[in-house]
Length: 144
Image: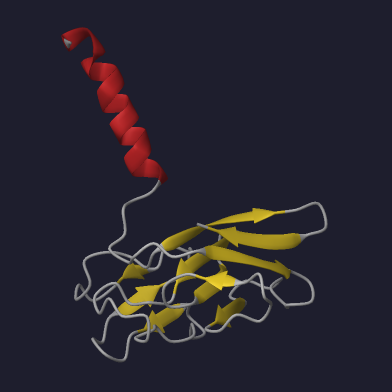
């Protein structure tokens, strides 16, 4: 067993680097949008989605925020505040600095580099992340 301990440790570290287990409940997630027509090209641009638009849209627990961060990467997070744990208590749209606020608990989440990290210490975890990919036609696809 000692022989495999470094391998087990490495696998655990890799798993923790790739994500975390959010307290926000699992819900179906699927969105497909055009980057160009949705004006997501400048840094700080975002889509704030609280209701499905198309029949195939699945918007997670509290809705989805797609954010074009300062590192030129697109991120997607659930809008539900992890501290409040309610699908109807959502963080605000990002301000000019990339900050989203929960009006219920007062936590502010930093989306500047897409992490959705709490800044005040009220919440103990970041906003729940979703997977972002692109197809050959420059459509952004959000999945769980």
